[in-house]
Length: 240
Image (cartoon, rainbow, N blue to C red):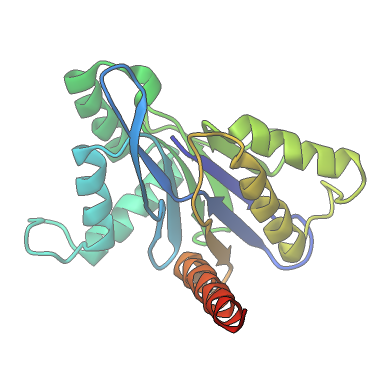
């Protein structure tokens, strides 16, 4: 499973922060975790970003690959313009039919509705908006708040954010982009108490004029910091 957080600002520049863990779990027939590997779970295009909560299925991989590489010759009658049409049709109609089909195929083979794929979608066209996409492809804006939680670690993440807001560390009605980044990333760190979430976080920021991805930068910085610490340890051990 995973932890996904999507948070929209409500003061200052319009923006949406998407944050997630990067741990992918593999299970045996008794649903015990038998292996883990890192995986960036957020993908994005020119004006959209998607974060997925659900199993690593063949259907999901094909779907993500198609969205990331629309001009690949394997995808007949598709392409960048068709992808743009698909996204805008989904946003305007509040229904992402391809996600409904994705889960329908999964259900036909696996029959486990609890493991179907849900998404947080953020866009900056035609407006800066955030949606929860359920297993049937329905797009729903968050009600009575400007953030969305998905995945096995969502309870821990939500509890952390609510405690920050109730404790007056942050004001839910005055969240700027800096606050949204701090709250979202803090919640992802907190969600690592969920044994099914983990790894370096992934982070994508959607603004009116651009979309920026920071997941690889975060991962590389952690690897560099670890390497520097180990080199320092080696030097100290050698000098003992």
